[in-house]
Length: 430
Image 1 (cartoon, rainbow, N blue to C red):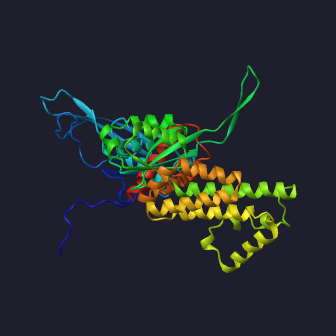
Image 2: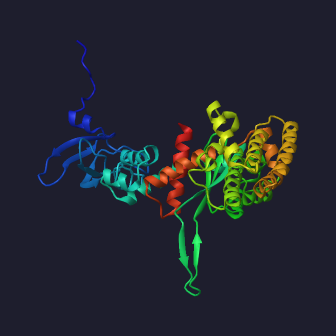
Image 3: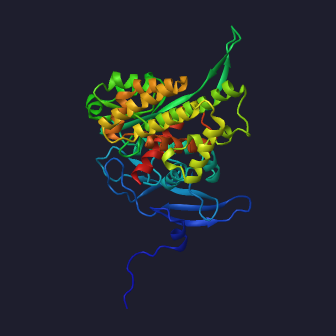
């Protein structure tokens, strides 16, 4: 009969399952958690010369933090000081250390891994994670910060081909009072997210939403890095465009079609509200078809069902005596047609048609919309040719908002950015 020749592992060590350690005793105090005493299962090597030690000098018990194992546990490490028996080694003795508990550490590596897993992959708040693992908030933050240093790739070593830039609000709006004048100032704390459109990974998060923050971040990148960027997608923000013209002058800039469509819907809403005041002398009410079907006016015309098209015709027939509302609706729809074109020639023809519809509408809302289209025409052409949008930036902003909600807000912008960057890097690698 064949029998195993290795050393059998006892049941307690197997259940506790801490690498490089074995359980030597377990006690059950009446006034606290279970107490588990462990020791290393192999003699260590000298950290200076590497010679394996064989003689112990002294022992002390070190309390180390570890993950809960079938409930809360208190782990004590029976830690030995060993003699270094190499005569040429300047170190006479040393305390043992392991990969799980390195020198000066007071917690196991698997505990730190579980803390990072809970915050980054599971999306749990730092305070909630600290409470669940019975450790301090500071330890969880230190574990996350250490993971960011070790695992986050160096942005300068990456070679993004397409970038996306968009802003999100870091905290709620606040008002500050000037003690001298007594006036109140509105403050909106914004942050700007810079994303690699090919991978969807967040490359950087900068304060504010002006050209200074984005410009400083781009200026910090190497020249070869900046020259490798071919296209950048942004919303219609003059501040972002200014930063790109300064630090990425050879890069094509595309304006996001979603934001342009949103501007068309905004013009539609403003025209409906203004026409109601001009024609009826009041705001819209539930009895007005234009107000009752206000969301129908914002839908894409090519997605309307037969019933929806019939209801839209009723709106124009019953609540649009001047015909201006329908004219604005046609402008909004023509803008959608322009953004769906597949070539620059088709886009130019669609722009001419848009100009004719704007002149026929004769409304300040559509005139403003057309001026915006003209100011951003080069960026619209880049959008049509490349198809670059800020969709992946918006997706990351949605995840960022969820991080903020889970933590019930962040006071420290550095901690906020580290969680954003680490979460994005983990999701991209998965």
